[in-house]
Length: 466
Image (tube, rainbow, N blue to C red; front, top):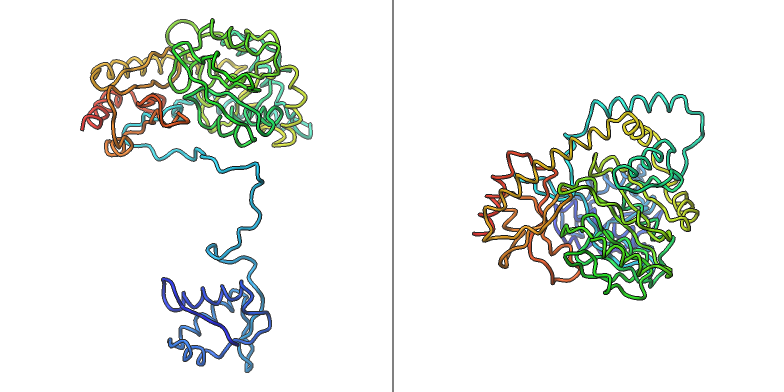
């Protein structure tokens, strides 16, 4: 056998010899049935201890790549099915329409002061009521003789959602218009599947929710940011070529202002008579603290051009993975088909448990309790922030479980300052598609304990002043 084994790289001599022999196998420089040199001869040729060769041969025999034949020597038995990552061929890649996008992964571990936005505390779940609802759902499942659930969602939950939206959001809708999803993100994905063609223009708020942009881009859309002002989306700057418009009218993400009635009517007038879909993401509209809750934009839709997305992630918890969509009439058949072709349906057990929670009144009681809790935390946070008007301005907000702070002056190395102070918070610049935009922080109060609010704000002030 003539083969080059350089023994380069890190690790012990047996480890380097093992890597070289595995590479030779993968690259075809060793073939099945070929006899390996005796351990003494290979050790002398490489200038290494014979025991290193013996150990390596034994390892490859144990793994099934080499075969030791008594009195005959060591032979190549088979080639490896996969090779080490650094020498592997790339294989099949994504299509030409796909480009790498940023993705929000798991949130980092909480720091001492958890001002992370858009998250709620699982400790606040009504566990006794939820356990009762789940047990009832288990009993119902045991009696259910249907083969599988509906792709549109469990009818009991859809009826509960339609009733809930009617009294809480001023949005009358029938259960047949409701589709149960695994969160608002799946709703965006389904709408993109049935509406977006490669190159289609999708208008989004700027600043806005980055994952929404990324979902639309992953389907080949050309995403265009549209500025927002104190009234919400600047409708007069929406591209004429837009085929979809994504908005958060109840509580603009991340700046927080609600879209005024005048601007809502202007947006509906803009799309009327055009083949344009408005996607309304009402991600935390349940929590409104000044005045009554605004009616959903969808409630003003007279021409079936608004798809309404909601989620139980903020009211209950994101791990539940249940949301819903109010579908425009013309998209219902296509959306049902798209849902059946992707995941088919959300788990029936959790849907029935949530339907029971709503039907028994426990969901409404929990929501009222959460509204009182977040109202208290919000007032406490606003009072603490008001102590340092020299450092920041709190942007006006009337709803939601986060606030937006605009810095009075530029702050360098913001992430390092937050890390050093043990603070979880999000840089507002992360929500802008460009580097230009509001310099400040998104401060959430869904996870932080009441007693940590004032001391956390003081720690933030010290970090920014350092």
